[in-house]
Length: 116
Picture 1 (cartoon, rainbow, N blue to C red):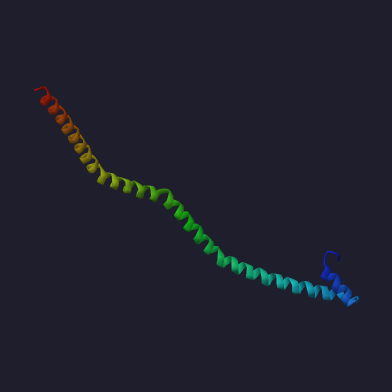
Picture 2: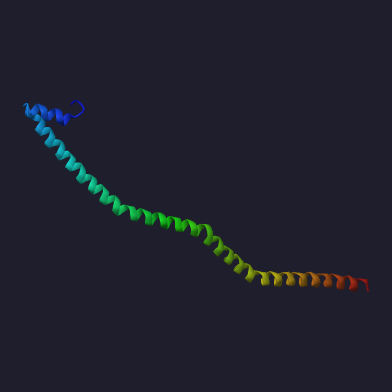
């Protein structure tokens, strides 16, 4: 009875040989209260379980998207940028070669004119 302070309190307050009936009543009342609380907890769990599963599925879907879609989109973007930049790069290389050729022609022509 030491482990159950309410039971000990009941036994002292009743102070009668018929305290067993009170204990039985008390324990049945506590059992009903525990069952009521268990029912509320189960109802809460039943409502929360689908919500948690839905959020977990959403997180899993996002993980899949991050792993696959972003690199695909990045690849498409880089190809698009490269596709636009390659012709410009070729044009710049052609212009650079033309400038080098003109510079050599000027150097050659200036040397030729000095020699004559």
